[in-house]
Amino acid sequence: MHDLRIGLLAKQTGTSTPTIRFYEEIGLLPEACRQEGGQRRYSQKDVRRLQLIRRCRDFGFSVEQVRQLMAIYDSPDSACNDAAQIAQQHLEAIQEKIDELTVLRSQISELVLRCETSCAGGSGPRCTVFDDSAQLTKSRSK
Image (cartoon, rainbow, N blue to C red; front, side):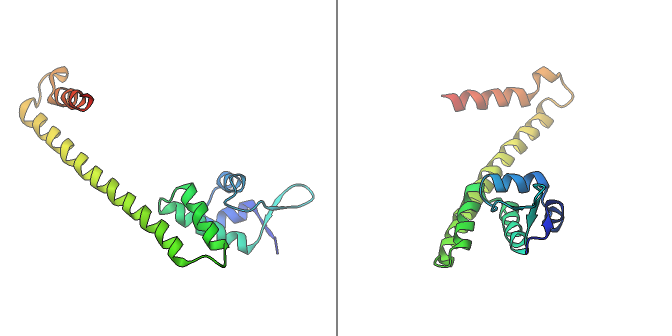
């Protein structure tokens, strides 16, 4: 039964109404049933689907990955391994990003330490932060 208005669907799922409309527009959420006046109406099945979509997005899955996961969810012939493979790929991408951020954190920490020891309280334009950053840019462009 389609007895939920978009505002109630949004409230029950913690999703904004523009996001719900967007998910309909891109096909993640089926187009809503409409009343005579054009108001969207949703079912409990839509609530469950939107909760799944929202959780996937909270986990950082891309829209395309969510689309793939929803296709698996919708297909009775699909295998759990298909969803696990998408999750594994996402996990690997997250680990790669963590590794990149760890290196970045280390580089910026060194930069801050050099600034504190070399030019603390000195002239802004002569700060080690600018000199070291310029050197990094030069070395990357070679």
